[in-house]
Amino acid sequence: MLPTATPPDPLAPLVTAAIHGALGTLLPLGIALALLAAAAAWLKPYLKGAAGEAAVARRLRRLGFPCLHDVILPAKDGSLTQIDHIALTAQGPLAIETKTYAGRIFGQQNDRAWTQALGGRKSRFQNPLRQNYKHVAALRHHLRTEVQGLVVFAGTARFPNGLPQGVVTLATFAAHMDRLGRPAPPQLAAPAWQTACRLAEQGRGQHQAHLAGLRARRSA
Image 1 (cartoon, rainbow, N blue to C red):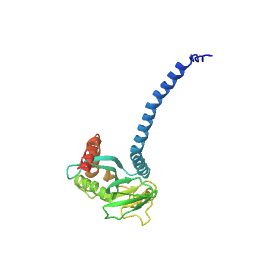
Image 2 (image 1 turned 90 degrees about the vertical axis):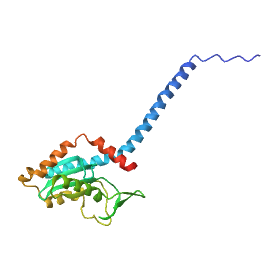
Image 3 (image 1 turned 30 degrees about the vertical axis):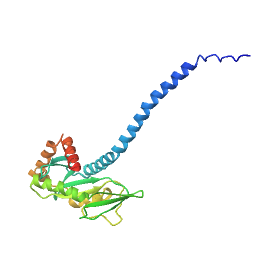
């Protein structure tokens, strides 16, 4: 007996079309998910930094200190510099640099770079006190008055060797600000604070120029 041919399955074309359609949908979806994951990893440090700055801003408001946030102004060398917060205290303007780190932090006041130890890995980053010194110098140049600086670690980082001078954690931030004291009403109308407010207003919209300057310096 001759073998008989198996009759074609009428559902086969439909199944094949369904498989091709599913693959056509899943492939772009997989690419999109991969791009989203890469974007999330890239944005994570920025989101953490923004959360830390928001926490410091809230604390300043609760403590009752006049303050400006995310201020971009020209430095003495003509480049743009970004100050996370400028607070007015009884001792004058205060430039605040906020850092949001986890793990253990090792570094001294005059070191060029500090070290973060986290999850068995170590990485180095710029000494934030040195970074904030440029902010303080820029403010002194524009305000023509004495300006202090402070670095606030708003994350969960620990300092096994103790906090360097000029550095506080978010937990000790309020006590430090209380020691500086709240400004007297005449200080709000003083030329230095009025200039700071004007600079903050003028700096709005300068973020792209500031980022372009950072990229140019890093690639040089």
